[in-house]
Length: 198
Image 1: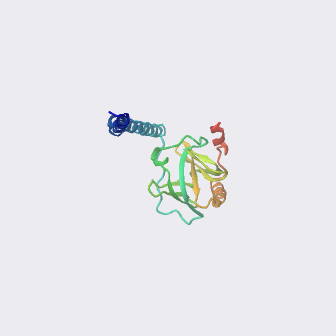
Image 2 (image 1 turned 135 degrees about the vertical axis):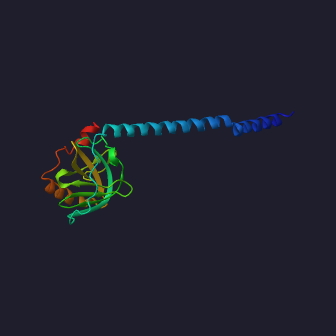
Image 3 (image 1 turned 45 degrees about the horizontal axis):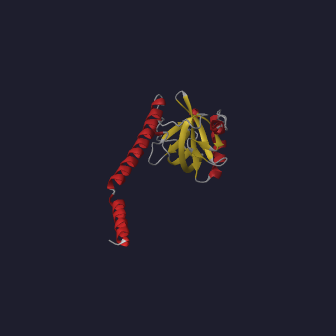
């Protein structure tokens, strides 16, 4: 048999082996799916653990039927709530860890947070502790002043909730209005996220 025929036959056989080696393909596919499933399971366990850690928190107050005339309104995104001063300690109990669109309304009675696709809640004026501009909260880092952080009391725990307005220039008016309504700025240090990142 000519040498060229032998070489051609080996090439065809090699290509056939590469195409029909289903065992390796199936093994890699199953391994990849198992790895993805493991990652998902670990993330779910972490989320459940956080919910257990903050399980003693009472549910936030539901939106009242009437809150009075609005001092300020804002549309944007709700990013997260964390333990006050601990920008990475996300609170997931009662849906407070769920990111969503948000509509905020500030009245003399308090702060209404409407979140399409997530639980709405109300922070009475007596529970507001202050507001500040910040750069980060629980997985979201922005430029200086890109985040409106509102500190409020839920049960025995103070929380920081982070919002990003569709028009961030509105943040300054919100900080001023909430600090006036609450009687002063938030006690939590404005640089807490930089300290936590070290």
